[in-house]
Image (tube, rainbow, N blue to C red; front, side, top):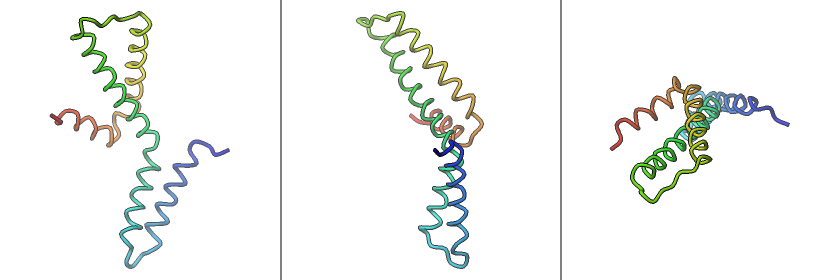
Length: 114
């Protein structure tokens, strides 16, 4: 069984190999693959956490709109607790990644997107 951290390390090793194997005139395909492998290796957990934050943001925003503007909407205690748990998980994920560049880029995109 492969350990969780082995895969990202393998991806970084592969990226280094690709970047160094064609020293004089590297092919664009190799250089692009290097960037992809590096991103995948360094950010696998960050990307998963960011996806969790983004999904929660959308779901909570939709739920909020329904609660604010849909007069036929009835909220159950169970559903309220579920939404609180979703928000709590999203805050925990954000706390873990908030200083990562990809998280900062996402936050900036949210602020400037119209």
